[in-house]
Image (tube, rainbow, N blue to C red; front, side, top):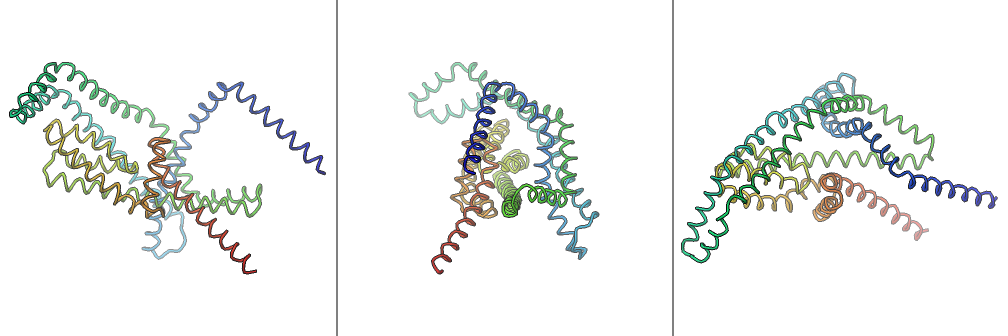
Amino acid sequence: MSNKIDIKKIILLVIIALVAYLAIANFKIIELLISKLAKALFPFLLGIILAFVLNIFMSKIENLIKKITNTKKTTRFIRLISISLSLIIFLLFLTFVSLELVPELIKNIETLIKNIPGIINDIEEYLLGILSDYPEIQNKFISIFNDTTNLNQILMNILNYLVNGSINIVANFVSSIITFFTAIVFAIYMLSQKEYLINGLQKVLNAYLSKEKANKIMSIGKLSNITFSKFVSGQCLEAVILGTIFFIVLTIFRFPYALLISVLTTITALIPIFGALIAMVIGAILIATISPIQALIFIAIFLIIQQIEGNLIYPKVVGKSVGLSPIWTLLSVTVGGSLFGIMGMLVGLPLASILYALIVKDVNVRIKKGTNKRIS
């Protein structure tokens, strides 16, 4: 019996080694096939992500409708209304961003490019006035500004890059419209048939795995869904809070583009902790078209609010919603961002929360088993 088991292990190891050799020898072909497969599956992967996000809104709308109508079961009509309202909210948000916010940003950045020479002169005159009592420092400063051509060219290149990048984003969005609608159709199908899909997955797992393993995978999936839903809800709430704070502060101090910058901050704040810094850069550029001095003051105010938000508001609002303490919230986002960039920031927190919940559950089970053993 043991000889048969050893032979099976040897055959399995030989097959694994052969597959590994073929994969290494044909790495470029495999890489090309994977890229083509990923491109073909991208609309459906996007649809799955959209379904997870829309499911959060859909579930809340369903619960609200059932509460109002005093209905216990989710009917087809309630599901249809919930999906429709969720899609309307999502599409209105995308329409606002693509038709109102992006063109306005491009327009103001182009205005800034035209006003660069005047802005540089204003900054130079302001600084020279401050340094009028310090002739030596003033002379060094004048020597730095003697050749403004290179400075103008550098700023022009930076801002042209920003404008071209913004235009490319819009162009890519328009060119991907078919992919987007394919993803939406797939997401609608998943949402309308989510109970059927979950039951089907349960049957497949039961058919190929033991009941214990199948139930464990389903419990992990359920935990992941709950954690992700809480994370998105907390992230959206935090973004609205941050955008509201900025709108109040910028309005009180009479900064230009208060509403535009606040909306932009709300959107970019969906990227955990560090996303709002993108709004700071763009906001400073917009304000600089009106007053370079106000732009510097805006950066200072932004950094102060960002520190308060990152260390107090975010860990309590988002960290609490996913069951992590502030220190673990900051750690998961920082490590995820350093390893995988923006995507790592987005995924790091809910993933850390899932791992934390699984570890806590396993520790409690092991402690309980150990206690029972000692008692017996």
